[in-house]
Amino acid sequence: MRRRARGCWFGFGCGRRLKLARLACGVVGLFAVQQISGAPITVTDDFNRSVTLAKPAERILSLSPHNTENLFSAGAGSKVVGGVEHSDYPPAAARLASVGNSYARINLEAVLALAPDLVVAWETAGNRETLQKIAQLGFQLYYSEPRNFADIIENIEELALLAGSSALIHPPAAHLREELAQVRAQFGGKSTQTVFYQVWREPLMTINGAHLLSRALELCGARNAFAHLPIIAPQLSLEAILQADPDIIITARVPGQPPQQQRAWWKKWASLSAVQHDGFVWVDGAMHRNTARMIMGLRNLCEQIDQVRQRREN
Image (cartoon, rainbow, N blue to C red; front, side, top):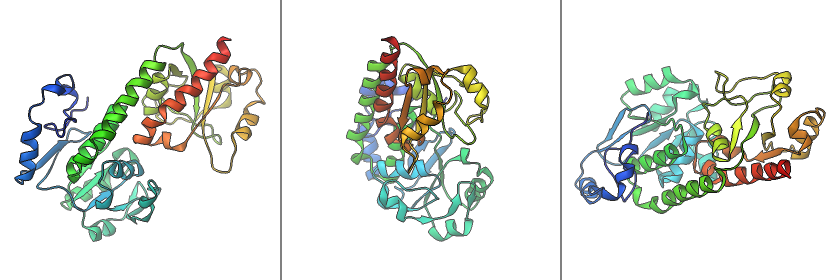
């Protein structure tokens, strides 16, 4: 299980073990004094690695689109000096210098040229060897690997701490937590719907139970029909989907491809329960990134699932 930052700041980020005692965190003022006095800033990343900076980072390199977005959410956008391909949100992120055209192919010379004092990494991208080389060159790495919605918020808080922008994100972080609680309370007790989450159509691909999107489905009172598969993004046969007979088919919106086109393709299999009850749900591509936008998209996802649920029950 993941741990949290050593200390609290501006009233939040006390860590998973301290959450029940957040109101008793009397080190807030002390932490602020430590930062003012120039004491090191220390957090623990998603791989339980201690990350310490002598002072707030001024030049930050992001090695994944979700990290880039979370850095901007953390109020550190002005300090981000580079990113990777598909770092396109917010719009300012698209203007960043690129150090690679894919997550697994990072240009070390470009990294050296940017001279970052903090590198925000994502090991799942498959660039473990490159990340080890970056660490060997003396750069400080923070590994982001959020496994649930609380982790996303805590990632943003920790990045804000490392960038010295914590004072900017207290209200947004509180709003994200409140939104999560409200969505869970509103939809968590609903009758369970079985879902096929279509990541891609040619070939047919989905997600397994380890993916954060499966947590999103659970929050909405739904169940991933393929949660049991061992691969996080498995390829499926059409026969497997027909056999699973999901109540709902969820598809990410594809630019230039209207939802009606996707619906028409599936209607060729009229025996599917999802087809019979018009059980089609459409989500924005932002739901595929572990960011604040994913959290803010949960309500829309749950409302669409609930509309299908009501059609089936009526």
